[in-house]
Image (cartoon, rainbow, N blue to C red; front, side, top):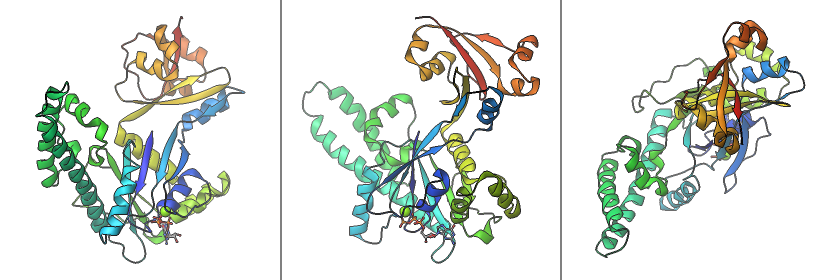
Length: 346
Ligand SMILES: Nc1nc2c(ncn2[C@@H]2O[C@H](COP(=O)(O)OP(=O)(O)OP(=O)(O)O)[C@@H](O)[C@H]2O)c(=O)[nH]1
Ligand SMILES: [Mg+2]
């Protein structure tokens, strides 16, 4: 999974990235910085403690940290557009707005960013329409496809002009397929991080310009980046004092998963215990394919137990004795926290 942190200048994106990755803070230069963030999972911690000599392999999120965007004039807007070009392949955006110090108007800054994403898409769609309009008069192999795409692009153009993001305009898989290669920015899901001052952690932020389904995480990036540098014991102590229930990385990743509709299944291997992110609704056969194509090809059964049962009953034997190990077939829909042992034959 790949996410991009975007926001206006000095909103705390790089500080946030340092809090998420635990790596030292790196100020933004001209380019995009990429860092791998490990997805905390207490179930893996438990499994690693329970099964000796197996190391936990956490899922990861690739985080792109963009330099601060500015739309003050044509020059900065062009620079922002060039940066947008570099994030066309991400799965989602995290908009970081600041709510500390000067010039902090989270709602307004959010509107600016949302509007600029819409404008960038409108520009791209309009250019594409121009191209397609010329192209469809020529008797090419792609004529039928081009006509269908043109009709769709015109619909998107109208929607974008009315300030509707592309993801609300797409009606089916076929339409999605037609525009996929363009990497339209507002076709992607997004979430919001409000970067607050240390003394405003408990404040509630209400946005009337944000869909209710959008995940909003409130945190203090600076504080969290300092906490991330501490050893586990002192971190826990400070967090209790500060009234922080979960570290930023946990809340951040949970919101990313919720935004993308992701869950995890778990595997217990010979020398590792591992979490595998999948989309909600994934069947056992496709889950097997995540682990290895051979396992998918030679799929026989998915021997499955719920992590909760294993934890409650203590060990695999007890889970088996309780009749809670299931043999599932290819079409079984995998649940969050399923521990799966794939039986396969190639
Ligand atoms: N008080 C306070 N300061 C913060 C917080 N987060 C970041 N800062 C400070 O704000 C400044 C900018 O932080 P960065 O993380 O570099 O912000 P950025 O969005 O990456 O900045 P650009 O990449 O230049 O746009 C730094 O001096 C940080 O120490 C915060 O939560 N509270
Ligand atoms: Mg930065």
